[in-house]
Amino acid sequence: MNKIILLFLLIITAVSCKKDNIEPLKPKGKPKGEIPTKTTNLSDCYKADIAGNIIELQIQNKAEVTTGTLTYAFSGKEVTQGAFKGKWENNILVANYYYKAKGKSKERQIVFKRINNELLEGYGERKTNSTQFKDVTKIKFNENMPLKKVVCN
Image (tube, rainbow, N blue to C red):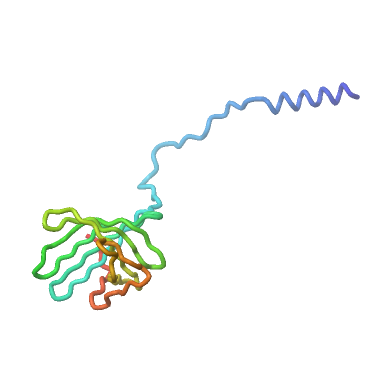
C-alpha cells in the first residue's frame, strides 16, 4: 500500500513539474482602425475679452500637476505671455506663472477659481518683497472679468 501511495506521489510530482511548450497567442494581422487610448492630458481653454482687455488661459490637467499658458493683453499695456505650473484644490488653481515683461524673466503666483464653465482670477495681499500671496485663503476673486470656457485653438 505504501508503494502505491509513493508511486502516486511521484507521478503527481512529475506531471506538475512538466514544462508546457505552449506559445502565447499572437495576433493575426494589424487591428482595423485606431486603437482608442485613455488620455490623462485634458486641455481646457478660457478667455475674457472686456473692452479690448483680454486674458487667455489654456490648462493641461495631468494627474497631480496642472500646467498651461496664460496671456494678458490689456489695452495700452505690454502683452505678457508665459507658462504656469500648479495644482487644483477645491476648484481653486494655485500656480506659479513664468513670463517675460520688458525683456526680463519674471515669476508670480496666480490663483483662479472655477465656477461652472468660468474662471475668476484671484487677487489679494502679497508677501513683503515677494510675488507670492500672503494668505491664499483670503484671496478675493474678480467677478468683473470672468474667463469663459471656449474651444481650444
